[in-house]
Image (tube, rainbow, N blue to C red; front, side, top):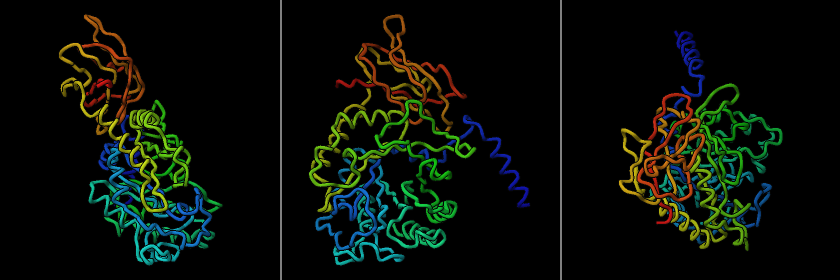
Length: 416
């Protein structure tokens, strides 16, 4: 009987190996609707002016005397973030929670006399302020001697995954960074099994070449730009999977961790808006890297820039000039002639991603004039075009993989 069930499952999987047939899980749909998140880097590197730790830092250097996780979360929320991913352990191996499986952690630091838990404080702040919570646990470990032994280190890593998956409530995402390996062969099947056991609804992030079993893929760069043609379904190891892109980029150029005297590296509002339009505006997820300083506070300039960014996104896209009707979601009537300069399109991902090519036309008198065009739509597509005075716009699908299901289009006037 088990053999028959396995064969039927295998046959059904083969039948689904068509881009147009794949659908996201409810968890993936919910995650894609979050649109913006933040990734928090904090640890010994913060106190040593480093980006990459070598695993030799004395835990005594970690002593953030003013740590305020709620300040981090409030700043993220002001930026429009709906979730936060905490770097619980970076490549240096230092753990920001009191792990039972190593002494190289906050329990050997002077912070709170070794009784603190950064991960726990951040998780509680997220719950209080309505952000979903995720965790980053680096597979590469430059401190622990077990890393040289595949089996022993996999036991250690799986044990830490279990700690994090069972102590801090529901996780929206679990990050597996692909940096470093030094000859280590990771037991990804075991990692996935561990996470699915304790957090079945958490989505696993990793780059395509690092782990084939993930739910989310790295966009492929740290500039925060997704490709103009961005498909949620990817062919990986000969298997098609729904694996949407997450585009991560630091708030300060080239710095994931805080460094002194680097305020000039803070990205401008104009840069952040370009990033937003080339990530969320191309159907990918935007994750901004934020870095508390050696006080344990997000620098005031960073918090202000995040607030400015969130405010600008809300100004531009908070109130549409008009939206399409459910019966004809690609047609938007303005009622009278009005100025507009951008449109937001979305496919209903429950029906898959279908659009390959489309154009947008605006009514000019009795004629229609093309104002924008694009390739994929997916979760969200933002098109900014030269301002036009028009009473209606329509979306014309030029090519698709199958029947297209659009959500009602929304048009805006960016000058307002």
